[in-house]
Image (cartoon, rainbow, N blue to C red; front, side, top):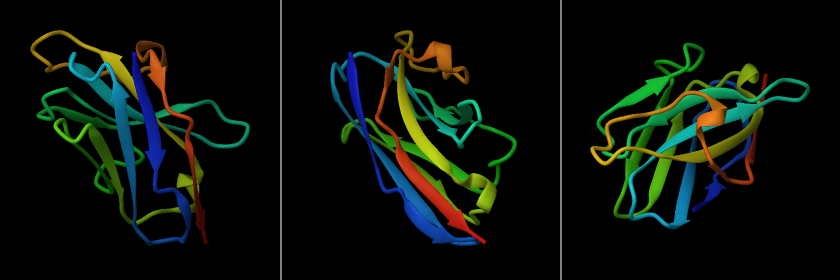
Length: 128
């Protein structure tokens, strides 16, 4: 099992940048992909970005492509989500999650059911 903790949420104005960190602990020696998801009030949790264990493969939701960047340092057990050009529609609770993956570490996942371990979430509020 992997424990995850999100750091870095806050309140910013539209157009600003914010960087979220996801610090992992526990069983971090086995390969796992990490995903960022978000949930706005009265909406379902949605996929934002994901990165493979190796860090070489990433995927983004269309709504954030070109504005958000996901990266990771496996030795530091940390995954980052750099968010630029933030919009009010980006307002949500952001969660990071871990999914066990195969030994080559090339896979990533975009569905919530594919992830077994979740952080507690961090609030991001973008004002207009």
